[in-house]
Each structure stands twice: as C-alpha cells, then as structure tokens.
Amino acid sequence: MLTSLLLGKPWPARAFALGLALLVVLLVRGLFPGGLRAIDERSGDFLWRTFPSQTQERRVIVVDIDEASLAEIGPWPWPRERLANLSAKLAALGAGTQVFDIVLPDPRPGDELFAVEISRHPVVLSQIFVLGQEEAVTAGKLQGALLSPACGNPLPLARGFIGNAPALIADAGHISPRIDQDGAVRRLPALVCYDGQVYPALGLAALLKAAAAAPALTLAPGAGWLAPAYQLSHEALPGIVIPLDRNGDMRLSYGLARGSFISVPAADVLAGRAPAEFFRGAMVLVGATAFGISDAVPTPHGGAVGGAEVHAQFIAALLDGRLPFTPQGASAIQLLQAAFAACVLLLLTTRRSRLPAVSLPLAGLALAFFMFVAHGRALLASHLWLGWADPALFSLCAGLLLGVAEHARIRLERESLFRNLSSYLPAAVAADIAFREPSGVIDARRCDITVLYADLRNFSAYCEHLPAEDAAALLHAFFTLVDRVVHDHGGSVEEYAGDAVMAIWQATPQEVTLALRAAAGILAQGSAILPAPPPGLEALGIGIGIETGSALVGSFGPARRRRHTALGKTVTIATRLQSLTGELAEAIILGPAAAALLPEAGLIPLGEFLLEGLHHPRNIFAFHPQDKGAEP
Image 1: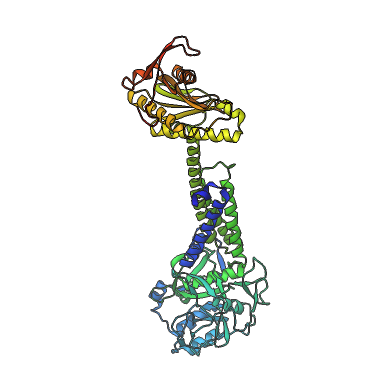
Image 2 (image 1 turned 180 degrees about the horizontal axis):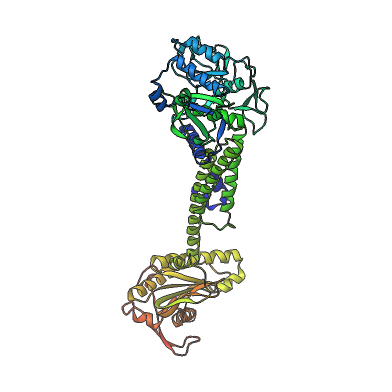
C-alpha cells in the first residue's frame, strides 16, 4: 500500500506526510503538555537577556535591604521604629509613592510609630495570597480591596492570605506570583478574589496610589484578534491598559536590563548618604536581597533576583505600555504559520524546484528559525507573545517527513525505472547506464561471445491474414518463451528485432553448450505456442542460428535516442544461419566456430555455404535433438 502511495501521484504521499507531522505535534502536546510551552518560555527568557533595553529608569528607584545594610545597621527583622525612620528619610529626600515589598504580619513594638509615619506619606504595603493547591493559611489583616470589578471570571480565587499587622493601616497590593515549573516568575495575577472582595497586585495598587485614583478598575473582554483576552483600565490613568490572559494573569516584562534600575542600599538612606536627586518625585520600591530574607526569585535575568526588582520591571513596563500579552488570535496566527510552512515545503517538492530531498529537512529547520525570529520580533517590537514552538515543531516534522517521503519516492521511482529499463535491456547493461548522463558517443567494447538468433519463420505472411491483436499475442508469447529459456540457461536477451530474438553467452565450450541447450528448449517448447496457419499458408516455424566469435557490444546512436546491441561478423553469421534454416529444412544451424567448441555434441555437417553478404564460404552444421525436449 505504501509503495503504491509513493509511486502514484505524489500529492497523496505529501498530504500523508503533512498529516503525520500534525499528528506528531498533537501527540507531543498531549503527552508532554508543558514541553512546548516551556520552549516558548525559555526562548522568551533568551530574548529578554539578549536584547534588553539599556535605557536608565529614573521613575522607579529600588531601596535594597542588602547584606551590607544588614552588616551596618543590624540583622533582619528590623525594629518597626527603624522602618518608620526609613520611610521618614525617603519622604525627606523627596520620594513620591513608597512601595514596601515586605510583609509584616506579626504585631510588634513600634507598630504605632510606623503606622503614624506611613499615614503621613503615600505608602503601599504588600500582602500575600494563597493560590492553587498551597496550604491555606491566614495571618495579619487584608487591606486595599477595590470597589470594582466584582469577583468572577477570570479572576482567581485565593484560599488564604498573609496580611500585615492590624495596626499598620495603608493601601496594599499582593505579591503572589505564578511560579512556573522551572521556578521562574513570569506571570502575576492582576487581581485576586478573597471572601467576595477583589485585591490588586502591588504594582497596580502603587499606580493607583501615585495617581490618587479611586480604588476601582474596569475589567472588559478584549476586542479583536490582536487584543488580549481581557483588559483593565481606569479613567484616571489615560493611555494605560493592563492586558490579562484567560486566567486573569499579567505576563511580566523583563525588557529593561538589570543595570537600568537605580538601586540604593537601605543603609545609605538611613545614614543620609543617598543622593537626593535620585528620589525626587520617584516611586520608591523597598525590598530585600540579603541572603536569608527569602525574597529572591528566579527570573529571565538571573537565578536570584530580588522581588523589588521584579515589581520595578512590572511598574516600568506598565507605565510605558510594554506589558507583553498573548493576543486572542495567537492560535490562528500559529495555524497560518504552519500552513505557510506546509506551502513552502510543498513548493520545494515540485519537480520544477529540482532540489534534493535533503533540502526539505533543512528548509523545515530554516522555517522553524524564521518562526522564532517572528516571535522575537513581535515580542520586542510590539509586545505580542505569539508563541512559536508548536508551528516550529510542525515545520521540522513536516520537513523531515516530506524529505523521507520524497527520498523514498525517488528511490522507488529509480527502482521502478531500473526494472522497466531492465525489461528493454539486459540487466547488467541497465545497471550500468541507468544513472549515467546520456552520451552521444559510441560506448561499446569488443569481446568474444556466443550469439543465438531465433526467428519465427513465415510470420510476415501470417500477419497479413490475421488481426494485429492476434499477431501481437503470438509475438508476445514467443518473446516470453525465448526470454525464459535463455535466462534459465544462463544467457541474456540482447535485443528483439521484428519477429526475431538475439541472445548472447560467453564464448566458452560450457557457454556454447548452454546456448545449444537453450535452442533445443526453444524449439521443443515453441511448437506448443505456434497456432495452425490460415488456409493456403505455410505453417509457422522456428529457425535458430548459433555462432561464436568476436563482436562489439555496447550502446550506439545520438544521446537522445540510444540503442544497445551487438555488432560484428559473428552476429551477421548467426543471422544468416537462421535465414538458411528454412531453405535447408533445419531448425538449428551452427557456424564453424561454435561447432569447433562442441566436438561431442552430435552435430551434422551440412557442407560449405557462402552466406549472403559474406565473401568466404563456411562449413555449417545442424543439430537434431533426438527428442524435442532433450538437451545435447
């Protein structure tokens, strides 16, 4: 079935290869549901690391509670009075909104002082929600609920929370990321529902606080193929649209290099060493990178990045409208990419392209790389996350399978061509010339051979009185018989000429004996296929001439139309001997050279004859098989 598919019209085989490539993609997605997505994510990480923007970010400043700060000021956790002093120092430096990426769930001495201080300035605190299958815990007090939107699809539901001490009253935002299987943080729920209320992410809460906007956002579904699944907006934040996916998550942007952010040690702020020009009007993110505080997370920029830096990236991207998102038409775009790859690969399989089969896997690889480039271009230039692994895998599989199919088809076509060529030429000759460029020069060699020339006597008169179909059937039966008998006796049919067949063997006594046995076999079995002649015509008969000697065997004629045959005096003698069989009423006549190699074969001398077209007479011999089926 597969052979007939490959040797028939090429399109079914190519369609089968493309269908199989699609099946491979579906199987990979079914058996390894996160595998292709992981490739997309890792490629996005590579793009963020390789092509980050080096523009310095002055709107968001990071105050880092780092190892040096702990060594100078004291170990963590710091007293609340010290945090109050830090907030006061930041306000004195002219900072705008203060965003604390720190959760303080336990009531401690000094809470009242810290609460008084943060009430004097625009401050946003952090809180954590328990999402997914994590253990449900509750600690501290939740704050910062929005007036709108209401809980519902696509906002995720929390099972618990860790808030701040009840005395610390301020606006708050959650810092509960989605953790991918590799531990990296690439998504963040924009809003989280708990107990019927909606709470924003830390960056959104900070943005609302900085704009003195009402704690309400508008949630709407995206409109159009290139729009996100959902989007958040606020009338007090014109031009800022927050894209969400179908799970209510925002994809984080890591488009700025880590060096783009100004990071000031907390000890420098407390000691009065921090330059004021950094802080005037800026949003300040207070976070920790010191070992042991457990606020380091893996990101595309590194394996241990402080949480404050993640939020800084998010806020900067939010202000610039750089948050990447997956458009609703991403699946359709991937299907179009796969269809484009299929069309390109199919064009390469047409005979006009004349490209080898190995070019198809290479083309599939090039198309996969093109899809990666398109994905990267869309992400870096337009902030669209299209995904490329699925169509790239299809392209690779399609190129490989089409290449295998084309290679198999070409091999089968060549084998079929060789088999057909072998039916017109001797197998050894067909093998020699099948895959060579045709030439217009003589390609022949001189060698000693034994020639058997067999002919249907009176066939022309027979054809004159009967339909061509009957004549063709008889000739076909005769050729089939001669070919089988010659092949069984180690010879090869060299050519069919009219109603005659020429076969050759090597010029040795053993080979001449085989030729004589083949002649006896043809004569014995041929009588069974010869029909009775029409009334008034002489009966059909078989005449065979055999001679041994030198001949030129090879290909002759122009490059566009070659002929393979044997030429020379030996061939001429064999044909003339065959023509004498009718006149001498002998079925098998041998020439002198062939007879000399068969002294014990029981040949009957017929005397000297001057053969037509030759200048010297020759002794010829007849062979009479005692039984038509017997061998000499």
